[in-house]
Length: 611
Image 1 (cartoon, rainbow, N blue to C red):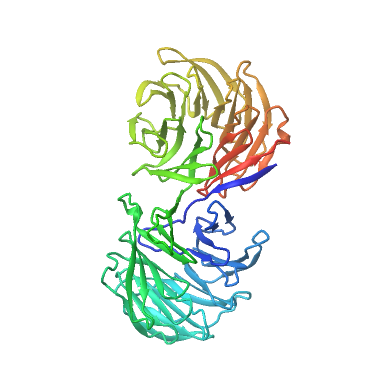
Image 2 (image 1 turned 90 degrees about the vertical axis):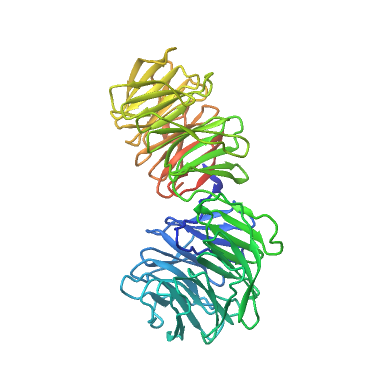
């Protein structure tokens, strides 16, 4: 039996030059954001409390709670809106094809009976309002000629809808049934976001022309604008009102967030606070999303980091919530301090997590795509899609300067002999292996067959190399750093994908692309546990428990399967749908806790109870 203990979730997916929309439910104090095909529901009181909805067939762009908090409407790039319940397993209420292209924004009416969605209509309608239960269209939305980036529903009667987009226009509609009322061209660039104040008296627009305009909520007439004094120096991507309708929060490409006091009559908005951030100096510090919910001011950077400020004490340093945006390709659990997990994603981001705490710190590798990660207590070794192997010193709460060596081939697999005096590492490439001492190449050996996976024993005296033909070649490592073949094992019917030694070195396990895993006795070279054929697709990863009793495997079939070595493979423990899109890495934190990561850019911890 397996039970989910913790989720270290991904952060919102972002796009340079575009704002993103996060929303929330003030009653439950949770927020919604999207990454890939998933919608994440995250508590602001307990950031580790995360739920995931992954039923969309395409990348999700926006999700919003209904006014009563019982339903969520989420939309994707195909123009589909799904309405689903927040309780009892996210039961689907309805699914509608609303637009012909990507949906960029949607809003509920205050009575929860209507939804308006806007986006890219691909030559057809760019905005549509419909009944939440039947999907019936409620009016015509003429007036826009290009993609509509944002829309807003007036939160009080009489009903009104305001929209804005890439044609620099702000359009106003009354109804229902809704029809065109007026249009404004006050902005000179893309209008990125439009939001009604909670009391419905005003709405505000922000644009890439660095300006914010204030309009009357009932008539749609322009009544004021945000002051240019102390204003933003770059495109303004998002805006959010305070619950009392007196202030707004804006975020911009100039890497700042500002709180504005809006006059009672809406004629002017003045900066009362500019929020400060720890900057890394790169484009990832640009702010692209924001939300003002209860006492929380939330900003989202291009790099995905969410900063939670307190509205009562804006000078207080923010709580940072960070993580991966892209799929997590590899992870490592540090030996002596078993509560520390390192994970790396395809885009070159390395994140350090602490069990029971969550995010600790991160390092962004510039212009480097990461494929494999191996770690000791003091350093991290990385390999990517070029010919380089990187080493990064690791201290308590920070990463050192990265150094690299070019091995002349693209690395396939990397492992470290953690107990050898020099911490020798073995890096495999398509036709051989390289032995490294730190970043010094000790030897480069062409093995004469197509290599698929490799591992070096912790003492550095033995290496196992798996081939594309499914054979396992066992070598002894001599003092002059040459390899001598000792045995060839044949059992697999597909290319080897992963090989790992047990902690006590009496066994090793291997997995292949033909969904089979095998546990071998190291001394006799005989199969110790076979028939491990319960995945339905390629095995990507494998890990041993510290007590040598269990082996966990992860596959692109989205499952993690845990086998007990002393029991038949049929008595396995299966974690289904562990990661949407597939599992890329697994590791044991202790004898009954498994960490896993995958294509959904998240890391999860599972408690395993042997049967």
